[in-house]
Amino acid sequence: AAEQRAIDAEQKLGAAEQRAIDAEQKLGAAEQKAVTTEQSIRAEAKHEISIANQRHRNDIDRLNRRLALNLEQKTSELEAYKGMCQQAEMGKQQQQIQISTLQGEKEELSKRVEEVMLHINTEIQKA
Image (cartoon, rainbow, N blue to C red; front, side, top):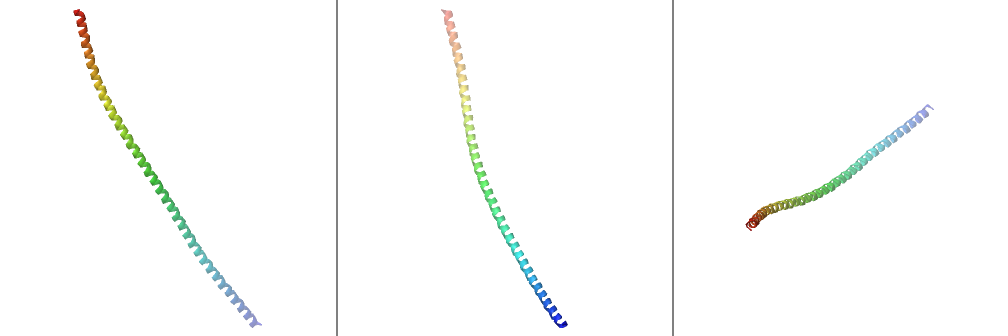
């Protein structure tokens, strides 16, 4: 009977050892699955970050192109405005020359009118 109990205890010990081995294998499998899952999550996150970075670079490139076009347009408008200002300045100078010329002609005509009036007054007094 004691021998039978020893055999039963040995079998129970063997069964317990087998369960421990099975549990260790399950733990190893779970750890491997955790490592694989972590690697997969890291790879996916890295991929998502890469996609987001590319989108940001594309957005920045698009904004830079838009800014360059706006700058080119504003520069062109500024050049056109400068041209208009130069033309206006030239027109102003021409008008000042014409005003000076007309003032000179006016003074000359005023002198001639005075001369004619003196001549007429002289002729009236002679008559």
